[in-house]
Amino acid sequence: MRFMRRIILRFVMIFIILNISCFLYAEKKVYEARRINFELLKLDGKLDESTWQDKNWGSDFTQWEPRNGEPASSDTKFIIGYDDENLYFAICALENEPNKFIKRKTRRDELDGDLIEIQLDSYNDQKTAFVLQVNAAGSKGDGIISEDSKETDLSWDPVWDVATSVNDHCWTMELKIPFKQLRFANRDEQVWGLQVERLKYRKQEYSTWQPVPKDNPGWVSSFGILRGIKKVNPSKRIEITPYTASKLKTSSRNPENPFSNHAEKSLTGGIDGKVGITNNISLDVTINPDFGQVEADPSVVNLSAFETFYPEKRPFFVEGSNIFDFSVLSKFRDNGDDELLLFHARRIGRKPVYVPHTGLNEFFKIPENTSILAALKLSGKTGNGYSIGVLDAITDNEKTEFGNRYEKKFIRISFWCSPQIPHDFP
Image (cartoon, rainbow, N blue to C red; front, top):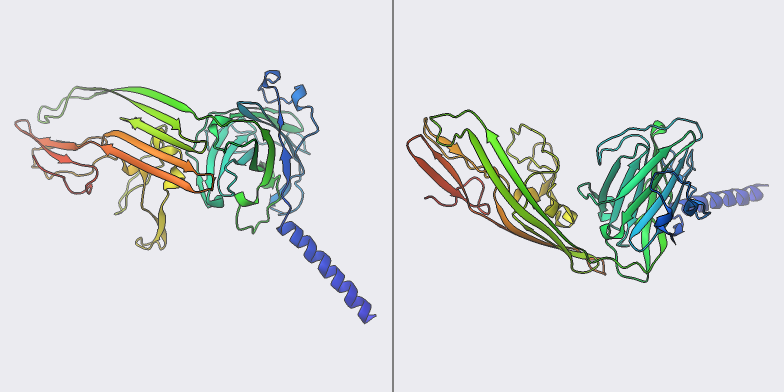
């Protein structure tokens, strides 16, 4: 009897170990995309077109949180199609309890409530992924994951369309993203990494199409596989975006201040351009870039010796910014280990901070930013997965004016010098 018990116990242990190992090293799922005719579709979020009446649904989602590895409490289904210009997603998020969806309209990249997240490793390097987020109210979010999920950049804002629809037992969405917004190699058939993730807000349940162990050391490297996208040529895009900006500032005139004007007027303009050198590498050029941010920087009071880091929003510096991320641990701050940025794009064109020592009756005028005459950036990845990033900018000499009602003086300031020390004197 003891011998039989030992044999049975060993079989039970082997069975448990095999099941655990099968989950830890789950076989990657494969989804086959199909070519569709977009003219038959109406992008309204309702999956009532004949195009979506297909049995090629991806499903069987697995919980990532809170019960890692168990089936999702409500399943999610999706279909992926494509044509020569765009990639399409139709997704149905099922609900086993009617009218339990959390539907909240939010700003871009600040999603709340029930949502779906699509992650595409179009480089197929198992390190980088383009992310598209949509919640039940139709709000959008997007970004780039790099270094196998160690870094996330939400400043990537591609042009894409989505529509959602909600009923008692599910919420659905239709999504279209142009291929020219993604980066991928020129092959007869594309093989990408794919992950579809769902947040069931009221239960705080995250479920994924490709099962991922909670203690998995990477994220993008564990994606499933997307196949079937054939004979799609990545576009070597050429984009030119001119701009003009005018400014009018009015204030009451101070007769003692020689820089005080009742009305200050200015008119400026410039060009942003992008050229696709290869399928994965692009050249960005800008002349006199616009310093009007997409979103205004928040007001802060900085009483420390360290600069305030604002997110980059200027279009020229946004794409491929993760390639220029050189951060190291620093112990210079009082709160212990922290990251020290060796390169921060917002330093280029920053406001000169030198303040001259003036007399009691003297005033000064500091430029709002350092003028960037022109800049060039080459960024992307090679076919072997190596990242390339080259950036050069030419800035103008700026001057801080100071004086009184009888006399004006100025100090020239160059960007490439220390911001605390004037470059030269008149």
